[in-house]
Image 1 (cartoon, rainbow, N blue to C red):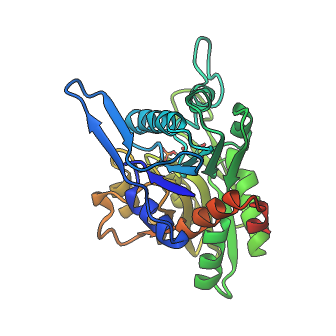
Image 2: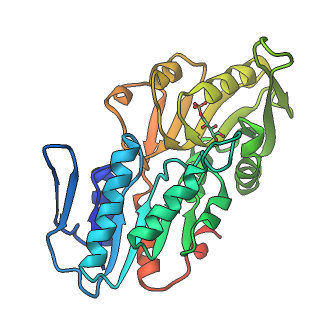
Length: 310
Ligand code: R5P
């Protein structure tokens, strides 16, 4: 097996490499004067089972292009099989036409990865499970529950827990978490009653005096999460915590979270922590290195990955 790291999340790649006890293959990445990218794999990969690890997070276009170029370099280097390991799959939220003459960029990205020469994709918590169908190659879509659930059980033993979906789109994920935790489920329904008025947050379910755990796939601006946390407190929640897989955290998200009534936001390291997160009292990261590492090992040994989630 060969493990190769892109530049988006070197820390996670190193942790995966030490979990598997497989060194990262040397790779050289250069920029030409006009900013074009050049990738050279510095070791022989002929006949090897290759895993290229790259989250397509900020700057998404650069990281995506780097992924495509690296896959091409591996293919032309006669790799036996190439798996694109994409802990965070950017552009996933553009998964349907939102109006006339708009793109479905998640599908375009899937086409690009396939055309570049990937044989498989290993990713985690796609915004919508159906995105797997945008690829005509096998996709393993890991869930973060094996990392989040033990942490929640540990921290909140004996608490009256309620899992919260911060919007109607996240109900399936939240229900699966509630089932694993044996907890209640509540849903936040955002509605704009009339054009020009502000959104009203309806909480469907009983959250009074409960420890509320919001689960979601992505936190971007933090708007969805902070509004949900405020609504839960208004409805009598005892504490509000959030477990969110991908910390996109754009703009003033970190400051918004720091000022929110949320006790703690727990993220995975699918996207590296930014400097702005350092020292923020209510943000924490859990590593998915062993989860992804184990999935890589099982892919390489042709063993079941779904067995990881039973
Ligand atoms: C939306 O459907 C996603 O699951 C997230 O809730 C959303 O992307 C979060 O975005 P923001 O933090 O900007 O509200």
